[in-house]
Length: 166
Length: 273
Image (tube, rainbow over all chains, first blue to last red; front, side, top):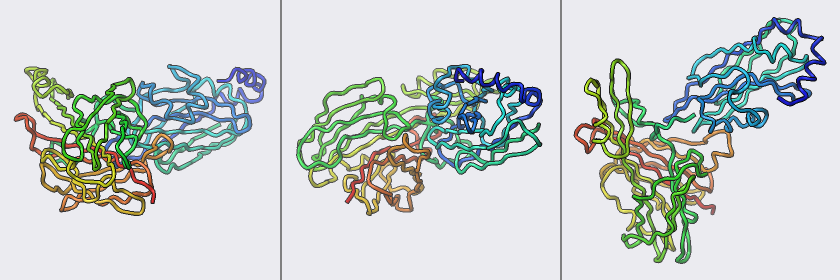
């Protein structure tokens, strides 16, 4: 996180803090099944990008404790990963096998301080001897009405659904 | 992403309980000559690496077993062997017209068993006996797999010939119909796969164009050898290609091994015309 971000958050805090604390930000991710000879579960990274400021809020990382491959999440690595070290910011966990997975970011402290604005939730997947893909889900914060934002990956990610509740 | 267990060839065709043992997992391994088609005698340098980045080095590949064969079928001169931290290197002296073959053969064993309801796995490069010695008394469902691999690359001075490319009749080998140093854009290449010297159907082949580090997809394609053991490779463009072929049968050398896995890995350079 860049040093000026907490200040920005503090300045804006009065605008949204009460509302944001109860909001739900939950993701459903489909990891596609591959018919390949050599399959390794992909590494996945999740973060928020503020559309205007470009400010990045790390949300989570699924990896297998092998830092060697983290740079292959190239966008996440450049935006936030390379400035971090374990434990990585957000909800971290092991890689997931193909199928539907859920991850609920609602309780992350970073969301309680999240400035109002237009955001993209970024999901990046990178698979060894496979490919890399980034999917973007735009949304507004704070959330006014319950809504679901959907995006579809082409290769490394299937359907990704962001469930937002005020 | 990767575990150290190694992985194998593209879509091995297996049967029954042998299917899907993790022994099938291996990193990509390759030999990369600095030049494959040259017009006079000279030195050529070769990288050898275990690396999924085609063809960017990652880890050294042991050179002890290296065979370098010249156009006359005799051993060629190799110098400057180095097993570095991220790659192995050697130079080969090309002294006569014709085609040189570089081969790095390898053998490993994979052992799995059930013990107290849990699956145990071991992989070893020091022979089957060393692995079998690790078996506890109460091991059940013991399965031993024998893996033979063969890394190859080819270099030609002047016109290609095939003396150095004659098959040994052992394991999985590539028999050129199109010479591996006669590959040009706009032309298909035809290769035959031999298992113990016999053309064999059902060899699974994966081809990956160089440069995987700089793109978001492997861009690989897969082929299966036909009834004559043959495949046709349609190169999408000039450049270097990684080819990995795999086959499995029950003709293991070790009497306790139920399965033999064969891997053939080669590097090809396709030139623009």
